Length: 492
Image 1 (cartoon, rainbow, N blue to C red):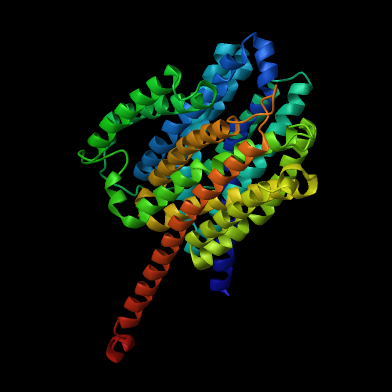
Image 2: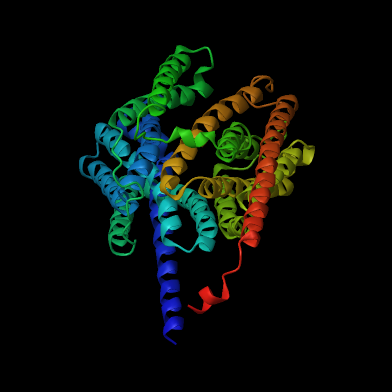
């Protein structure tokens, strides 16, 4: 009876912990997406053009890129709970700065402070790995991804309601309330994390060098779509960032306590994981950011276009998020039973089928079929992202979980920025006269590009799947080869 009660108690604690992790992830995603639907209003409210107001997104992304790796490393070193509490407190201050001062400079400062919340997901995955039974980790990671999907849609909707009601500051009030609640729960519910790297020192030089280097790189990549590859606004910051990252890599390979243990990339399994992340960002993950708006909002009668309204598109996005939230746990089940490479293969196969469908006339113009493809793309996107995190958990040591989750996050975001620009460029190669809308030809070229790159990612994922099965078979062989304990030892 005691053992049963103990197991039930541990099970209840695990469920409570997972719920808190999901809520914390929701708070971080809400902060990221809440301003997306408010950009035109904020531009008019502060008298700043769209290029200027877009800095409230850019500064969030730049700070977030550094936070994802630095916070992950600090969490691995000093305890993930401790660093999580610090990030939530900084995010809370960021929201309060905007609420109190209500000025454009305060908004920029607040968004920069909120950007530290991008470091939350590496910590959450690390906490899940160290605090939950091993068999629950893949499902928890899938639920975190599903939560991010549905919160992104809900965040835009809630912020839109508040802006339409004339209370734009309200979205920062909601963000502050969520952060305060999560801060309380993190303190009281999340178990105390142990240091996984006792005696390690902070690589301050690596941290100071990495932040501006990756920031410059991402700044140039975010300008790529609008300015073009030949613009100094693109290649100057990208060049500066590339030089900075090269120096950073040189330093990290030589210091005794690196910010990121790049020596782990000597492992073929981890190299393949990073490769599939980059390839996936270059095509299917980036293409989905353009797919919906171009297809849904372009006028009916065009070579590509459903002729639906922005409101309808918002409802479709919310529906897709809900379905994705319901189906993404399947990716966790697959990862738990067959390995994360299997769920990655499933997600990439879905993407191939989706873009084959989009290349057909029905996929470009028949509303019911196109909507099915849009919803399926949302599900495939969640499958791939949750698989990325689970693959990292499978191949890196426990003490580097948050560190390399952050690395994967930055690599994915950088490749998505490049892929988005490439996809947009392909669509603009041929446009309907006197419009910026793509012709059938450019749409087919875009679909072909995505399908081809996705197949390459699929081949890498299949090689990971073969490697995973080989490692499992070798592990079973080693266990079978272990001698049985002697009778005397058993009775001792």
